[in-house]
Length: 240
Ligand SMILES: CC(C)CCOP(=O)(O)OP(=O)(O)O
Ligand SMILES: [Mg+2]
Image: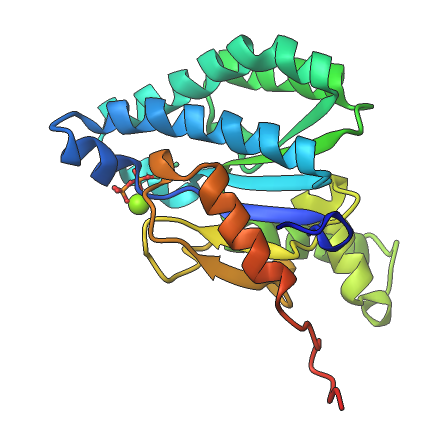
Protein backbone atom coordinates (compact mmCIF):
# COMPACT_ATOMS: atom_id res chain seq x y z
CA UNK A 1 0.00 0.00 0.00
CA UNK A 2 0.93 3.64 -0.23
CA UNK A 3 3.28 4.93 2.45
CA UNK A 4 2.17 8.27 3.81
CA UNK A 5 5.75 9.11 4.87
CA UNK A 6 6.94 8.68 1.26
CA UNK A 7 4.12 10.68 -0.34
CA UNK A 8 5.37 13.05 -3.09
CA UNK A 9 4.93 16.66 -1.91
CA UNK A 10 4.32 18.03 -5.41
CA UNK A 11 2.65 16.00 -8.19
CA UNK A 12 2.36 17.40 -11.74
CA UNK A 13 -0.08 15.93 -14.25
CA UNK A 14 -0.33 16.17 -18.03
CA UNK A 15 -3.99 15.28 -18.53
CA UNK A 16 -4.05 13.72 -21.99
CA UNK A 17 -6.48 11.47 -23.88
CA UNK A 18 -9.81 13.30 -23.64
CA UNK A 19 -10.23 13.37 -27.43
CA UNK A 20 -9.47 9.68 -27.92
CA UNK A 21 -11.79 8.80 -25.02
CA UNK A 22 -14.66 10.65 -26.70
CA UNK A 23 -13.83 9.14 -30.10
CA UNK A 24 -14.04 5.61 -28.60
CA UNK A 25 -17.61 6.50 -27.65
CA UNK A 26 -18.52 8.16 -30.91
CA UNK A 27 -18.69 11.56 -29.22
CA UNK A 28 -17.15 14.98 -29.85
CA UNK A 29 -14.01 16.12 -28.00
CA UNK A 30 -16.23 18.18 -25.66
CA UNK A 31 -17.61 14.90 -24.25
CA UNK A 32 -14.05 13.87 -23.39
CA UNK A 33 -13.26 17.21 -21.77
CA UNK A 34 -16.42 16.99 -19.60
CA UNK A 35 -15.33 13.51 -18.45
CA UNK A 36 -11.80 14.84 -17.97
CA UNK A 37 -13.06 17.56 -15.63
CA UNK A 38 -14.69 14.89 -13.46
CA UNK A 39 -11.41 12.95 -13.48
CA UNK A 40 -9.56 16.05 -12.32
CA UNK A 41 -11.92 16.59 -9.38
CA UNK A 42 -11.38 12.97 -8.26
CA UNK A 43 -7.57 13.37 -8.41
CA UNK A 44 -7.82 16.67 -6.48
CA UNK A 45 -9.93 14.91 -3.82
CA UNK A 46 -7.47 12.00 -3.50
CA UNK A 47 -4.40 14.28 -3.47
CA UNK A 48 -5.83 16.28 -0.57
CA UNK A 49 -6.87 13.10 1.26
CA UNK A 50 -3.42 11.49 0.89
CA UNK A 51 -1.51 14.56 2.07
CA UNK A 52 -0.01 15.67 -1.27
CA UNK A 53 0.74 19.40 -0.81
CA UNK A 54 0.88 20.69 -4.41
CA UNK A 55 -0.86 19.42 -7.55
CA UNK A 56 -0.04 21.15 -10.85
CA UNK A 57 -2.19 20.15 -13.83
CA UNK A 58 -1.66 21.04 -17.50
CA UNK A 59 -5.17 22.09 -18.48
CA UNK A 60 -4.54 24.14 -21.65
CA UNK A 61 -1.21 24.85 -23.31
CA UNK A 62 -0.17 27.89 -25.35
CA UNK A 63 -0.10 25.46 -28.28
CA UNK A 64 -3.74 24.42 -27.72
CA UNK A 65 -4.85 27.83 -29.06
CA UNK A 66 -4.36 26.34 -32.55
CA UNK A 67 -7.21 23.86 -31.98
CA UNK A 68 -10.60 24.41 -33.71
CA UNK A 69 -12.31 27.52 -32.27
CA UNK A 70 -15.33 25.44 -31.21
CA UNK A 71 -13.09 23.24 -29.04
CA UNK A 72 -11.11 26.17 -27.59
CA UNK A 73 -14.34 28.04 -26.74
CA UNK A 74 -15.76 24.88 -25.17
CA UNK A 75 -12.65 24.33 -23.02
CA UNK A 76 -12.59 27.95 -21.81
CA UNK A 77 -16.29 27.79 -20.89
CA UNK A 78 -15.69 24.43 -19.19
CA UNK A 79 -12.96 26.02 -17.02
CA UNK A 80 -15.33 28.80 -16.03
CA UNK A 81 -18.23 26.41 -15.28
CA UNK A 82 -16.01 24.02 -13.33
CA UNK A 83 -14.42 26.78 -11.21
CA UNK A 84 -17.89 28.11 -10.33
CA UNK A 85 -19.34 24.65 -9.65
CA UNK A 86 -16.44 23.47 -7.47
CA UNK A 87 -15.70 26.73 -5.61
CA UNK A 88 -17.77 25.76 -2.52
CA UNK A 89 -15.90 22.46 -2.30
CA UNK A 90 -12.52 24.20 -2.57
CA UNK A 91 -13.53 26.55 0.24
CA UNK A 92 -14.86 23.71 2.41
CA UNK A 93 -11.80 21.52 1.80
CA UNK A 94 -9.23 24.33 2.09
CA UNK A 95 -7.90 23.96 -1.45
CA UNK A 96 -5.84 26.94 -2.66
CA UNK A 97 -6.22 27.63 -6.38
CA UNK A 98 -3.58 29.35 -8.54
CA UNK A 99 -3.80 29.65 -12.31
CA UNK A 100 -0.46 29.92 -14.14
CA UNK A 101 -0.04 30.91 -17.79
CA UNK A 102 -0.64 33.85 -20.11
CA UNK A 103 -4.03 34.91 -18.74
CA UNK A 104 -4.12 38.00 -21.01
CA UNK A 105 -5.42 35.75 -23.81
CA UNK A 106 -8.37 34.50 -21.74
CA UNK A 107 -11.90 35.97 -21.90
CA UNK A 108 -12.38 38.92 -19.50
CA UNK A 109 -15.04 36.99 -17.55
CA UNK A 110 -12.67 34.07 -16.97
CA UNK A 111 -9.81 36.40 -15.97
CA UNK A 112 -12.14 38.08 -13.45
CA UNK A 113 -13.31 34.73 -12.03
CA UNK A 114 -9.70 33.50 -11.74
CA UNK A 115 -8.69 36.62 -9.79
CA UNK A 116 -11.63 36.15 -7.42
CA UNK A 117 -10.93 32.44 -6.86
CA UNK A 118 -7.19 33.07 -6.26
CA UNK A 119 -7.98 35.86 -3.82
CA UNK A 120 -10.60 33.84 -1.91
CA UNK A 121 -8.38 30.77 -1.54
CA UNK A 122 -4.94 32.39 -1.20
CA UNK A 123 -4.52 31.49 2.50
CA UNK A 124 -5.77 27.89 2.28
CA UNK A 125 -3.17 25.22 3.00
CA UNK A 126 -4.75 21.77 2.65
CA UNK A 127 -3.73 21.37 -1.01
CA UNK A 128 -2.37 23.95 -3.48
CA UNK A 129 -3.85 23.30 -6.94
CA UNK A 130 -1.98 25.05 -9.76
CA UNK A 131 -3.93 24.99 -13.01
CA UNK A 132 -1.77 25.72 -16.06
CA UNK A 133 -3.95 27.52 -18.60
CA UNK A 134 -2.51 29.15 -21.73
CA UNK A 135 0.80 28.04 -20.25
CA UNK A 136 4.02 26.56 -21.62
CA UNK A 137 7.41 25.93 -20.08
CA UNK A 138 9.10 28.09 -22.71
CA UNK A 139 6.60 30.93 -22.15
CA UNK A 140 7.50 30.79 -18.43
CA UNK A 141 11.28 30.87 -19.02
CA UNK A 142 11.07 33.65 -21.64
CA UNK A 143 8.96 35.78 -19.26
CA UNK A 144 11.47 35.17 -16.43
CA UNK A 145 14.36 36.22 -18.70
CA UNK A 146 12.54 39.42 -19.68
CA UNK A 147 11.86 40.32 -16.05
CA UNK A 148 15.47 39.68 -15.06
CA UNK A 149 16.86 41.60 -18.06
CA UNK A 150 14.64 44.55 -17.12
CA UNK A 151 16.02 44.51 -13.57
CA UNK A 152 19.60 44.44 -14.86
CA UNK A 153 18.80 47.27 -17.30
CA UNK A 154 17.25 49.30 -14.47
CA UNK A 155 20.39 48.73 -12.43
CA UNK A 156 18.48 46.87 -9.69
CA UNK A 157 20.70 43.80 -10.09
CA UNK A 158 24.01 42.90 -11.80
CA UNK A 159 24.45 39.97 -14.22
CA UNK A 160 26.60 38.31 -11.53
CA UNK A 161 23.55 38.26 -9.22
CA UNK A 162 21.70 35.91 -11.58
CA UNK A 163 21.55 32.38 -10.13
CA UNK A 164 19.12 29.45 -10.00
CA UNK A 165 17.19 30.89 -7.09
CA UNK A 166 16.74 34.29 -8.74
CA UNK A 167 15.39 32.60 -11.89
CA UNK A 168 13.01 30.40 -9.87
CA UNK A 169 11.59 33.51 -8.21
CA UNK A 170 10.58 34.76 -11.66
CA UNK A 171 8.87 31.52 -12.77
CA UNK A 172 5.09 31.33 -12.34
CA UNK A 173 5.46 28.32 -10.05
CA UNK A 174 7.09 30.64 -7.50
CA UNK A 175 3.68 30.90 -5.77
CA UNK A 176 4.07 27.27 -4.70
CA UNK A 177 5.66 26.14 -1.41
CA UNK A 178 7.24 23.24 -3.34
CA UNK A 179 7.83 24.58 -6.90
CA UNK A 180 9.64 21.49 -8.23
CA UNK A 181 7.41 18.47 -8.88
CA UNK A 182 8.57 15.23 -7.26
CA UNK A 183 6.46 13.18 -9.67
CA UNK A 184 5.10 13.93 -13.15
CA UNK A 185 2.26 11.76 -14.46
CA UNK A 186 1.26 11.80 -18.12
CA UNK A 187 -1.74 9.76 -19.25
CA UNK A 188 -2.78 8.21 -22.59
CA UNK A 189 0.52 6.54 -23.40
CA UNK A 190 2.23 9.59 -24.91
CA UNK A 191 5.90 9.75 -23.90
CA UNK A 192 6.70 13.46 -24.10
CA UNK A 193 6.70 16.66 -22.03
CA UNK A 194 4.83 18.82 -24.63
CA UNK A 195 6.28 22.12 -23.41
CA UNK A 196 4.85 21.72 -19.91
CA UNK A 197 6.99 22.75 -16.90
CA UNK A 198 10.62 22.66 -18.12
CA UNK A 199 12.99 24.24 -15.60
CA UNK A 200 10.99 22.79 -12.72
CA UNK A 201 11.16 19.17 -14.00
CA UNK A 202 14.99 18.99 -13.73
CA UNK A 203 14.94 16.11 -11.19
CA UNK A 204 11.29 15.04 -11.35
CA UNK A 205 10.44 11.32 -11.46
CA UNK A 206 8.41 10.57 -14.60
CA UNK A 207 5.48 8.14 -14.78
CA UNK A 208 3.63 7.39 -18.01
CA UNK A 209 0.17 5.83 -17.64
CA UNK A 210 -1.64 4.02 -20.46
CA UNK A 211 -5.11 5.13 -19.35
CA UNK A 212 -6.80 7.96 -21.19
CA UNK A 213 -7.28 10.88 -18.79
CA UNK A 214 -11.03 10.35 -18.25
CA UNK A 215 -10.25 6.75 -17.23
CA UNK A 216 -7.46 7.77 -14.82
CA UNK A 217 -8.65 7.54 -11.24
CA UNK A 218 -7.74 6.08 -7.86
CA UNK A 219 -6.19 2.87 -9.24
CA UNK A 220 -4.02 4.83 -11.69
CA UNK A 221 -2.92 7.31 -9.06
CA UNK A 222 -2.05 4.49 -6.61
CA UNK A 223 0.03 2.81 -9.33
CA UNK A 224 1.89 6.04 -10.17
CA UNK A 225 2.64 6.91 -6.54
CA UNK A 226 3.61 3.30 -5.71
CA UNK A 227 6.12 3.42 -8.59
CA UNK A 228 7.42 6.75 -7.26
CA UNK A 229 7.81 5.38 -3.73
CA UNK A 230 9.93 2.49 -5.04
CA UNK A 231 12.44 4.76 -6.77
CA UNK A 232 15.81 5.92 -5.45
CA UNK A 233 16.36 9.60 -6.22
CA UNK A 234 20.09 10.30 -6.60
CA UNK A 235 20.13 13.87 -8.03
CA UNK A 236 23.26 13.00 -10.01
CA UNK A 237 25.21 11.73 -6.97
CA UNK A 238 27.02 8.40 -6.76
CA UNK A 239 25.13 6.44 -4.11
CA UNK A 240 27.11 3.45 -2.72
C1 LIG B 1 -6.74 20.43 -23.14
C2 LIG B 1 -6.26 19.11 -22.61
C3 LIG B 1 -6.61 18.89 -21.17
C4 LIG B 1 -6.79 18.00 -23.48
C5 LIG B 1 -6.18 16.65 -23.23
O1 LIG B 1 -6.74 15.67 -24.08
P1 LIG B 1 -6.63 15.80 -25.65
O2 LIG B 1 -7.72 16.68 -26.16
O3 LIG B 1 -5.24 16.19 -26.07
O4 LIG B 1 -6.96 14.30 -26.10
P2 LIG B 1 -6.32 13.51 -27.33
O5 LIG B 1 -4.82 13.56 -27.18
O6 LIG B 1 -6.87 12.11 -27.19
O7 LIG B 1 -6.79 14.20 -28.58
MG1 LIG C 1 -3.59 15.12 -26.53
